[in-house]
Image (cartoon, rainbow, N blue to C red):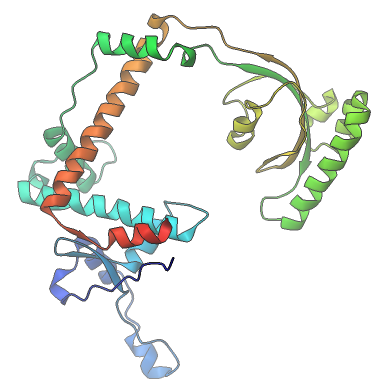
Length: 303
């Protein structure tokens, strides 16, 4: 199926969004460069595919926002960035309509814009705090989620390689797979291999990390570690540090918690869910008030 074609929105110069206008003001004027160097590109505004009411969001602004929305697929990052900018413009338009900017008071390191958005949401998106009945119902329906942290007793061999060294990381993976194959036959040699190959200080203890709970190791290693079963892991685990050969010696499941131990956590979670749902509904109202053009097409490209 062919990707949908996006038609640029051509607007007159008076319809720039505040953000786009600021971007133009901070863009150096290179008009003299073309006069001196005919091969230099002729300066001009970035194309526009996205519009909220009468405000344009150009591709330069989307590109700047993309740095905050990392994704393997650049179309996904572009769509996420565009969506974030659309939400911002919707809120700023409503702030302007309600005259909230002059009422906003900044706290801490807030910008005036951030203070105004916070005030708008406080005023227009009220969210009741969950009562104890709702909290207890959630606890009873999700008892398996509430327990003390799991922990694992683990050993590892770190085969270090910088994140940007592709050849080095491939070599580390290959060595790790070779060590795993040998350890399947000679498991008693794990400490020997750790002392010989590991770049982690734990090599002096035969690769012993001891009992580890969630959050104690590098996040990407942590996520995979707590999905493992006991025994030698069949493949290396990759982290920012390199590739790890991992042996899980024991797993201790956390003890169930009483309602009183997690009541505040449940209340905070339910309050966040209510706020997110209310904000989503509020944005739907704003979208009906301020038409959004071009976002659907950008999201289609990312699908």
